[in-house]
Image (cartoon, rainbow, N blue to C red; front, side, top):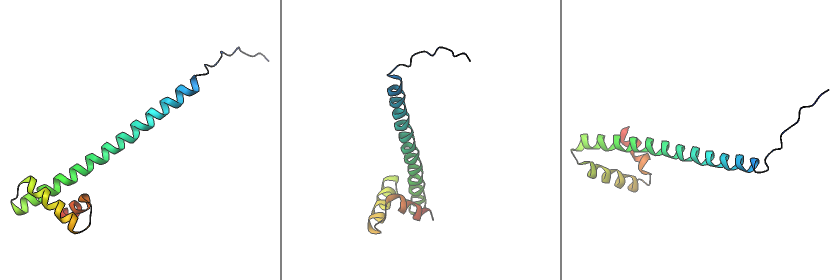
Length: 86
């Protein structure tokens, strides 16, 4: 049986891999947060548009109405948007 010589492993290699894994994990978490934010923004804009069409209000007034309804119903803004959209 013959063995091939092995090259020495850099002692900092494991630390480099761990640091890189942390960076990747942070980036994945940020990407997920941005996806959630994008989805929430789309729901909010649709609900504002629906209120604008139903009431003839401006975008700012529709947003204020959604906030007021959410507070009055003890709901989050996104929950109120979903209720508005039906």
